[in-house]
Image (cartoon, rainbow, N blue to C red):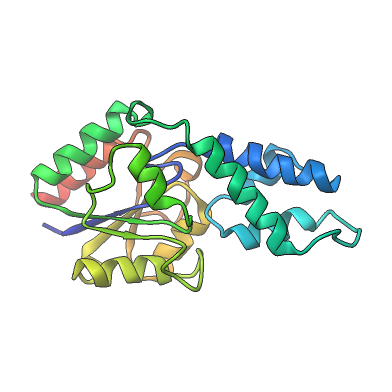
Length: 215
């Protein structure tokens, strides 16, 4: 087997909470009177909360009424409020099937996410104890595209980066995998990223990719 470990990004791959991010950041932008739309929201994919606020403030010329920490924390509170409605039924059947088959085949699996709410989301989806390793925003100092999150996941799995495959849907995440000297399969919004080793139209396509590598 070419790969012994599979490291999944969370949002956009395992879970789909982009609409929650949009709504919670829109609340902050509206409070400030700062421009915010789907295009700006797309730029926030895969980056930290603090960096996301900086991107939003690029078009904001006024002095902030409160500290940046106030706004990032308020965004997080609103996001967690929206997350509270998630249940295991929000886990797409194709994702669950793919994960179950990978486990049966003996792959070690991890989540590598910049989100500080990764464990909460996994719990809501019924995956709290599914992955051998979870590395999220609480465990790292540098968010994607820095390679820290994936390198730390490899280390905790006990597998060399060259033997792990990253599944990502964001440009920053693919750049993070490349910086970690890891192969990467692109999915979702980044499905056609030119530097990805594999391009997945559906998450189940991952099984075909790995099947070829097992032979």
